[in-house]
Amino acid sequence: MFLDLRVDDFRAGLLQWSSREVADYGRRGGGVMIALEKYLMNRKNTLDASLIEAGVFPSQAADVFISHSHRDRDEAIKLALSLESRGLSVFVDSCVWGHADELLRKIDDEFCVPDGWKHYSYPLRNRTTSNVHMILNSALHGMIDRAELLIFLDSESSVRVDDYVNDSEYLSSPWIFSELMFAGRVHRRPRKQLVLSAESTAFDGVTASTRREPEFLYPVPKLNYSIRFDDLVNWLQEDMPGDFHDPGIDGLEHLDRLYRKLRVPERLLKEPRIEA
Image 1: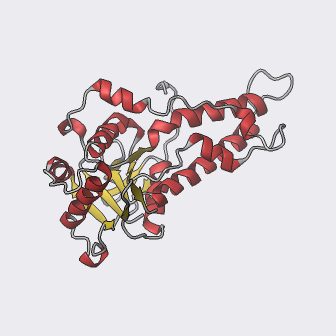
Image 2 (image 1 turned 180 degrees about the horizontal axis):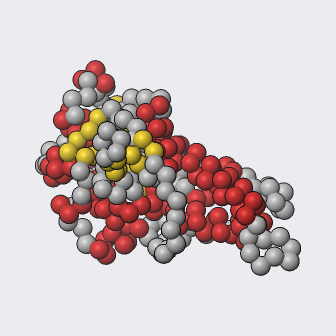
């Protein structure tokens, strides 16, 4: 990862995408089949974590990783569509959680109902859930590591202020907390560089419950850069004189314009995007 960015006061009303376009984006990858037997190492009860990660999560490196509250899923998708319209590849983690939930349910049905029982064993299900979530957390970290830019959407759904603790900010999602903590510690990489050849351009490189549920609070990890949402929208809408007229190249060049707005040190941007 090259840079992490917090978008303050995020709201997607300024991003004009239809509900159909949002729904179509959310269905991408919907053809993933969760076949439990392909994750078994001994065809009995030993699951291969690396196969699970590869089967549920995409393997490609996205230009932008969007960290967001699941309540902001549609709004995050609108931002992803806006970024893709500028030639960037985007990863929205909530779009793969349906596959993860299906996998966990199949594992629980297979391994967490003791003989003669009609319901799950609490200790067994705790174990499967914790292991699957650990695998998924590792996969999320891998996606962040491979992305160039992480964008965290600060909204009323993701961040709350506790008036009783000196107006401190807290997250209610352990997944966002994990993503932002990892983003603060991950090895920083140079920006992506494109290699031009005569033939091609290649990259280097739930239904709500009425039951009262417990809630956890996590401190908001500090990111290195922040931007007001209105300013982010203005950047998205800027005209970009594309010399190459290639979405991949023009998209990364557009990212560099964002980095300069954020006052990223010029020494980190001196390497050209294009390697002839």
